Length: 543
Image (cartoon, rainbow, N blue to C red; front, side, top):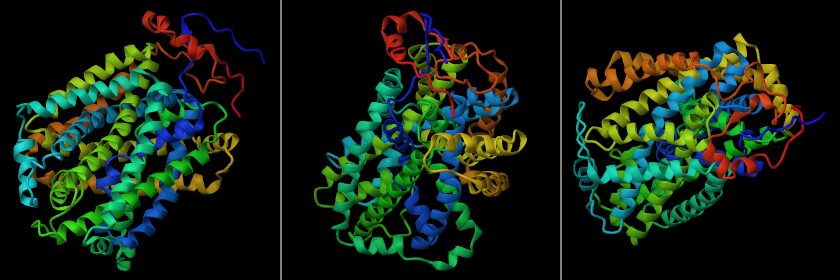
C-alpha cells in the first residue's frame, strides 16, 4: 500500500526509539516513592512474609492484566487517555479526562515531596534535624514544614524556592520530548537508582539489629490469609504502585511503534516493580532494626510508612549510624530519582492530552499546561498547611479517584462496549506471550469486584468519620470538592471540539495517517523537530 504524502507543517505522533526505552520509562513511572515507604509497612501490617502470597496473586490477576489493559488501549488507539477513549466511543471521552485531572491533582502535591527530599539531602550533611526520633519529628513538622491546619497560605521560603526548581527541571525534561526527554532521563536515572539503592540495602544488612528488623518484616502470620482485608490491601498496593488506571501507561504505550511486544513489556515492568518493592522492604526494615536497637528513643510501635518514615525515622537513623551523612545523601537521592521519573510520567499524561485536544507543539503544550500546574502547586503546597493539603488530596485522589475511574473504565470497556476480545486480539497480534480467556476473566470479573469492594469501603469510611480528624470544611474543599470538580471538568472538556487529532472514529490504521496529524507552531518547525519526526515512515498496518 502506498504511503500518504506528508505535507509541510504537520508531524506524526512522537515515539520512543525502541521497546527498551519504553520499558525503562514505564519502570521509572511505576517505581516511585510508594515502593520505598508504602509497601514495607503494608506488608508488615498485613501478615509479614505471609502477605507476599496475596501480593503475588494480586500482581498476576490484577497488576499485570491492568498494565496490559492500559497498553492495549493506548497502543491500539494511538492517543492520550481522552483521545483513546474518544476513538472507542464519543461518550467514553470523559473517562479519559477524569484520568487526566486525577494526574493533574497528583502532580500538584507530588512535586513538593521531591522538594522535601532535595532539602533533606542537603540537611544530611550537618544532620541539623537532631539525633533522636522525637527531635527529628519536631524538626520536620515544626521547624521545616511549620505545619498548621485550615486554609492558611503562609509560605515557607526554602520549600517554595526548591519547589520552583523541581518544576523547572520537570518541565524542561518534558519540553525535550518523548525520546530525548522522557526516554533518555529514564535510561540514566533508573540504572543509577538501582545501583544506589542496592548499595544502601547492602550497607543496611551489616548494621547491628538488622536481622531483628528482617525478622519483623518476613515472619509470617499465616492466619491473615483468611482475612479479606489483607487481600484487599494486597490488590490496593498493586493498583497504587504500578501507575495503572490514571492514564500513564496508556499514554506511554501510545508512543510505541506499531510492532511492539506489549505483553513481554508488561511482564518485565510488573515484576521489576515488585522486585524493587521487596528490595525496599529488606532495606527499610534492616535499617529500622538498627534504629530500634540504637537507643534513639524509638520502638517498633512508633515507626510507620509514608513521609514519617522518610523524613522522621530515617533522619534519626542517619544520626546514629556510622557514616550517616553519606548514607543520608544516598537515601534522599534515591527518593529524588524515584520521585522525579514518576513525576515526569504524571505530568506527561496532562501534556499529551492537551496536545491531542488543541493541536499545538510540545513546547506550547508544556508552557500552557505545565506552567499553570506549577503555579497551583507552588500556591498550595509549600505553605504551612501544605502537609495537610497533601494528605487529604493524596487520600481522595488515590482511594476515590484512581480506584473509581479504573472501575468505571473496566465496566465501560469490557461490558458496555464489549471490547475485551478486540483488545486481547490486539495484544496477541504484536506480542510473543499470548493472553487468553484468563485475561478476560481478570479484567471483566476479578479486578472489577476487588475495585468495587475497595471503593465502596473507602467511601463508607470517609463518610462515617472525618479523615484523620480534619475539619469538615477542609475535607469538603480538598477532598470531596476536588472529586466533584474533577467530574464536572471532565464533562466540560469532553464537550470542547478537537483541533489536534481529526481521526476520532476508531483507531487510525497507520502511524502516518494524515488524519492524525496536528499542526506545529513556528517555533517547533524552526527548531528542526519536524524534520526528525518525519525522517522515517512506518508503512506497517496494525495486526
